[in-house]
Image (cartoon, rainbow, N blue to C red; front, top):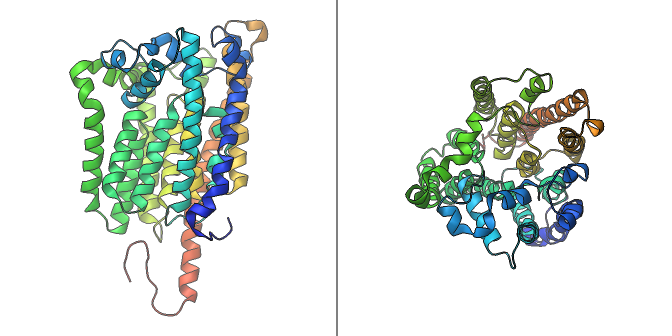
Length: 416
C-alpha cells in the first residue's frame, strides 16, 4: 500500500466505501432463497444455502433470546453466537419462519458492513505489521462467499479486535475480546496462545495476567447465566464436535467418500495432533525467528494448519482467515490463489450435497475429493506464505540495521 498520509481515518475513508461490495455480492447470491425459502434441495442447486437462515427455522429461534436462555432454542452454535442469533430472530417483525429468516439475514448484512469496516480499521492501525492491507478485508472474495452462510463473523470480529488490542498494548481489552470470541467461535483460544508466545518473545509476560483476567471475565459474563438456566446450551456445540463424524471440506472426509469413514475417537486424535503441530510451528516461528514476527503472521499460520488438519472444514470457516491474511501482509496474488480454490470448493460442495438425494445430478465423489484437496492445499499454501513473509521481514530488518550507523538493536526482544 502507499504511504499512509493524513492519518488512519483519512486512509480508511475510501476503504469504508468499498465494504458494502462483498455484502451486496452475498445478498445477490442469496436472492433465490430470499425469494423462495431455504427448504429442500433447491438451495444447493442455486448455491444459496445458508446455515444461518436454516438454523433460525429449525431451532425456532424466533421465540427469542429468553427461550434460548431457558434451553428451548437448540441452536448448534457456541453460547454468545446462539444468544445473538436468537436475539435478532426474536426481534423479527411479523410472523412466520420465512419472515424471521429474511429479517435475520437482512440485519446480518448490515452488521457485516460495520464489521468489515471495523476490521479494516484495525488492520490499518495495528502497529508492527508491515504490509498489512485493509483492502484485503473489505474486498476479500472469500468474505463475499461466506458472510451470510453462518454467524461465524461475530467470532471473527472479536478475535481480530483482540489481536489489535494486544498489538496496541491494551492487554485487558485484548483478553476480553478474545474471551468473548471464544464464546462465539472456538478458534480464538488459539490466538490466546499466539499472544502468549508473542508476550514471551517481547518481554511482556507480566501483561499476560491481565490478558487472562480479561478473558476470564468475558467468559464468566457469557457463561454464568447459562450455568444457572441451561448448562446443556452452554456445552452443546462443543460436545457435539467430539461426537460427529468427519465433516465436509476436511481431508478426513475423503475416506467417507470411499465408503470407509473413520470413528469419532480416531478423528478426535488426528485433530488434536493437528492442533499440536500448529502450536509447535507457531512456537518455532515466534520464538526462533531472528526477530519478532508479526502477531498476524503467526496467527495465520496456526489457524490455517488447524483448519487444514481438522475433522471438519465447512465453507464458512474460511472467513476466519480473511483478516489474518490481511494482517500477515500477504500479497494479493497469494490471496487470490486461495480465493480461487475456495470458490471451486464452494461450487463443488453444493453440487455434492444436492446430489446426495438426486444421483442423476450428483457431482462424482472423486471430483469433490479433488476440490477438497485443492482447497486444503491452498490453505496450507497460506500457512507457508505466512512463514515466508514473517521470516523475510526479519531478514529485511537485519539488512536495514546492518546498514544503519550505531549498534544493532533487536527491536522485538528489547536486547542490544
